[in-house]
Image (tube, rainbow, N blue to C red; front, side):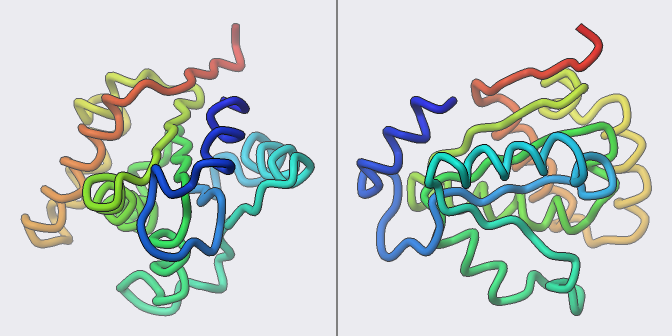
Length: 168
């Protein structure tokens, strides 16, 4: 992954159009991995001189993605979604992921998924914990919203990524 990040930093115009405010946007479920895996990943990237956007719970003020957060996603060269067991429980993770997917499709933004203690097939097919979460989301959100989340999970979950199993 470091080689991909180095390559993206030196050839950013190949991946995005327009301005870029960050090298990397990290997308993850804070309750699951903020204080361990994602925290360490963030420190390593910063140590390598990579400008990282990592969310703050203070950004969430309403039902829509905060404009500053949206600009951070749109302006990043690379997005790294870190899928974990509780990822799909969070509407915020899914809102961000849908925007990441749009940037990937429209601006050719590079997406490097990480599957942390979860099988990639659970993400792309929305099975296991992801299936349970969508049972709840479909009660609370419009069908077009949950379908955009499902499509983003399917497409990004199908990309080649890193599978990390802390039990191996």
